[in-house]
Length: 160
Picture 1: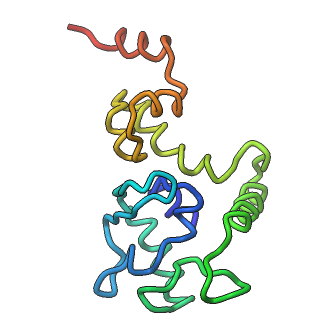
Picture 2 (picture 1 turned 90 degrees about the vertical axis):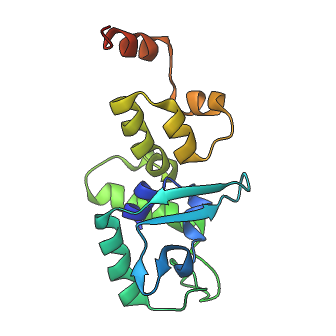
Picture 3 (picture 1 turned 90 degrees about the horizontal axis):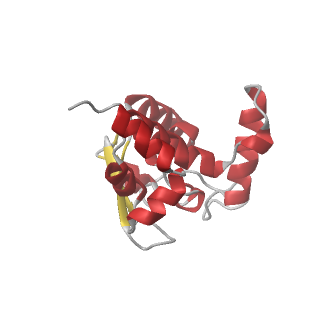
């Protein structure tokens, strides 16, 4: 679940409502998938790395199910998906298990992690905007906390 959360950069509500058919085709976990975000009703495409594909493959072999079923079903009802609250509880347990402070990490941390690394490595805010499915560049700037120092650091690193 957490590998897929990092790769997909989806909000918790979108991650838990993924259906098997969203990420599996012809019995194989896709390299790329696309979903319509609940908040914005806009499609967003994401990659699924080999590590995440292997994790998902192992999970789906364990849980089985049809293409129209949820990837992460509720333990209370097989027709419902895992709740965002339960997802947050699982993340807290995982964070604690690896020795981190649960209060410092949340489900949104997983959405933000990969794009923050991409931005830091490339400075390409437009790519981050596309990956997050933001319609406005200003939203992405605020989301990443980009400031004048970031812009100056990028400028200083560019020699003409």
